Length: 588
Image 1 (cartoon, rainbow, N blue to C red):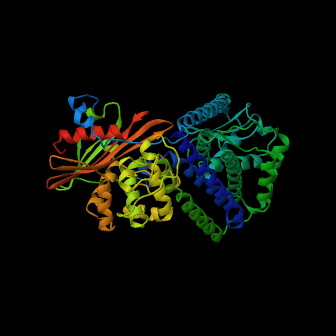
Image 2: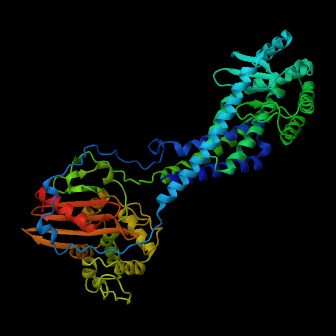
Image 3: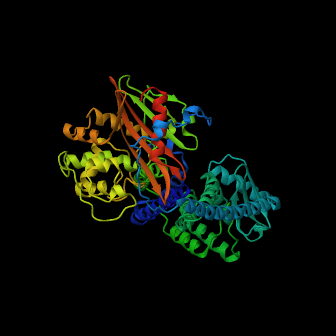
């Protein structure tokens, strides 16, 4: 979902910026100017995180690749036989839950973001064209003394790269720019009103920008401002980052000068500002000039300059490392939020993947079959078989088990009185016991059972049996009805197998009571157990389940079918598909 990624980007960027600003304020005296500037690179790292594929992140919820062995063909086995159509136990009742259609929210959010992205891109292209114009209007230095001074400054800073130095009538402030070919450009006729010492200080400043790779950082900042244009904190952060970069550059210049030149360097900046009107900001260039507020901050830091001690450098590194760990700790959050599909990590080398697409015409879904005798899975649609979706009424199997274990109901007495609320199904409008409630899928019965069992106890049971994503945040009444709780077809089959063999650690009599409650029919010495489930949202059936098992002589087969559709994916339809598949395989 686009909206989810939008929220992830906002949360990650905002948390990181807030953390950096807080650390800078609290540990200001323990951070060197370079250390303060370096903290902002953690923001650049954090801004990249939401765009790293989930599979490449640590702590991700891994999932299998899409099964490519699928087709859209039809076959006679897709026809539902007469006995399947009229099975009297296929009565799947569900009530609609109202949910907001977030697809519109996705579309609106995406449109707004793209509009902002395009606007920012246009401004960035305009800035790039302005830089191109400066390049075209730049001509080589004619003053041989200034050329020699530039080479001396390069040598002083151990810079061997090939830089173009020149002057342009289009600029009012010295600047450095360029990715593949780097330029140091001075205002036209600068040597007429700047002394050689002042020119030297300017060269040292611009060359330190080049040495620190600040030109490349400029481009990264612009890219992230385009992407994160919607977050005002990002704009504030990058403004502070640019100021910290200038201060760090000033300190680098001061560290390369004799102490008696420090005052002259500061005066050079002040004199330059006094002589030249402010150049408009070129976002793709490092400029010697700046706003009055920025210049004031720089002069104050220059006036209080002290050579960085080893202890201060160590403190800066320690703070950077600690904050880096905190920024990296957001990775599990990003991974969990980004993984909208919420797949179950299923690793079974014995699984066989088959093509049953003829049974699923018009539906997106999966079928999972487990043969307990051969200990082998047969799966249609590898990807969807691990996709967690709402269990809907299939959860009622475990709601009954939890109620029995908690002694809310018993095998002898499982009746719950009807509260008089009128429901659209006549079979719901009377008192129910476990047998009738399971047969008619009476939702209010299991909602009342859950309330009496209590949310905390239910959650502990869900953890005990490892039921899907264990998420009950949707509320005690609706967490299993197209809400927060989700489970995949593979997990449904695994749980049914554990229920059947009582690997869950529940009382045997309670397991048997649940088995009897989900017994559907017996024919030809084969017994079918199961439960349907339908997810109805805004009066549209979007999610259909049929899960269960077949006792077939000496063997038992466990199955789970899930289908999705925009408006007619019901548990009844899932049951019809399942019976057709089981018949084709000679299982039932």
